[in-house]
Image (cartoon, rainbow, N blue to C red; front, side, top):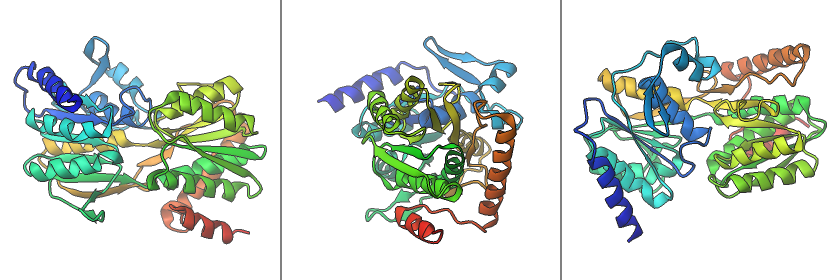
Length: 370
């Protein structure tokens, strides 16, 4: 009954809109929702700010001036050309649970969205089902390949799946943490899933690369939408002696950042540059440019260049990287660290250094560096 009521409410809400203008784009966020200042907000930035030139407020959408637009872009994108695209206000739906995903995606199709963006790997089953029922609709699936019934990667002409080599970015974050720590570092993941283990593997490898004697304490919250749980786990790691903690935990990560503020310690953000959340505590962030992936998909739809298949983005493609290192690191040392990070980045891009993406690969990486 709850699911039926939800669908009825959403249909009523969307049905109140006037007939949509051409190029309507729909986006469904996952359980972390709008305001996670991380993964979901990155996707929304790509659609609302970069593609449409709009800012979402409590009163609805506001048109951005050029200066406001540039100010809202991540620092590493501000000088790049992202012209606004001819789309009206997008359709955005939030899901409170996984059972909301499929009806949300179908509602966006029913509303005539030319592109339906599914944000997050947990939406893969819903995307698979809805895209199969609607072969003429186009879908962008973020953070997961499309899978067949047996769970093996597959492709469909109407689904573009974008995944990232997050381990390459987290490796650099680990090198930074290993360089600055007094000896003990923390990693906080959300759910214990292969994707988050990839974050962990790359990060721990980076710490090992920079500081073989450093200890990494690992904790998982079990969720992606519980800020209080993030505070609790973050406090525990800081109390156990960690001076830097890296989180890959969605909304829970905001709690980890709050724990860093309260403990007067350092934290590394994820997905988006989170330095504005706690300027004196966020050392850097492992940035994943979901925003660019969304923007380019919208652009391709408008230019009739959209195609299905897989796209993989890593350091080479500019899909992942580090946000600027915070001012808590003195300039001379910061400059030396940046040079070392650039050297390692070049080795990864050039193929001389392979970053582990699983815990088994991490074990081999460590064994090769006694």
